Image (tube, rainbow, N blue to C red):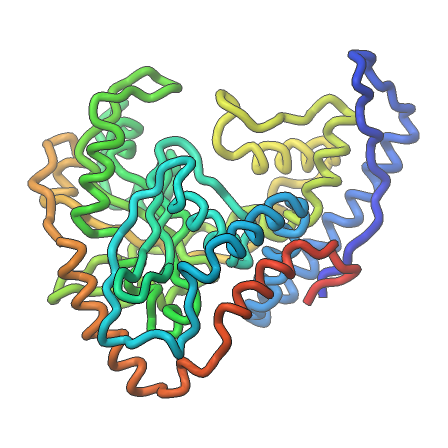
Length: 403
């Protein structure tokens, strides 16, 4: 159980520019309460993960999602209701043999943008719009006119040990070469397609020609904002990590003998998942001591990480508390030939072609239809109601305890 605790917090700054000065005893009272809460959270997390309790991890994500505030969830639910009758289906309305998946490129202020937002909000993990270079897609069933799932890609992490062990980058060129890749931060299907292994479809579509071509159209000739350098072409590879340990969605994901998602190792088990429910209180404390960093351009993509690390230092707690031990599996998509040579500075080979229609047909015959035959009860649920309830649950105020 994740227990919510009442922690003294800083008073919001007034609208004027007057600076609020806190008495040392006020600051210390907040700090002491936070030390206790952080250590309790770490202890409970260690006990739960030691038993392999993935439900506990999901509960932490849900709590962090609730802490984002009701605005995000309210917007997602309103969008879902707007499109519910047009683009969401129950399993009883789906004929697996006639599913026709296509990739819809998402741009701002479009229906596809609304649908991406609503769909991404259905997952237990807090909403994340991605950072840096971004590509977003809705996987859509043209025959049944229904959302299957989504793909969200963003700029890659500068350092990823499992990836970086693969290649010997030339001196001073690592960042340039890594920027020939993207990172998949949101990939998955929703009911009823998830029951037909729609996650495999979404994961496989990352390798499609459509994704590479969209990257070219979106970023050819453009420059990075931070370094004012030309954005590298082509898109040579994509990395991603599982949400909870090993991943069945990416495991053994092949197309005609070609391994699409290559397992390359695990993350090192560092992160803030076990402290996310304390993030508002940690930020409140940092504002009291003038240590808070707000999000925005120029502050980097990991502002939450920066603030939590800074809070631990101010509280006199060791950085080792960030080693939660949950090692996520890392996967690599090779989108060009001679990827290893390219990452060594010798030039990339030709793109590896995979038409989206070919993989869509392959998925339908390899996974969707056999799955429906093996589990004939897959289409008996009220999936649209389930999606509505999932979104509605994120609007409720955080409970005193979470599962």
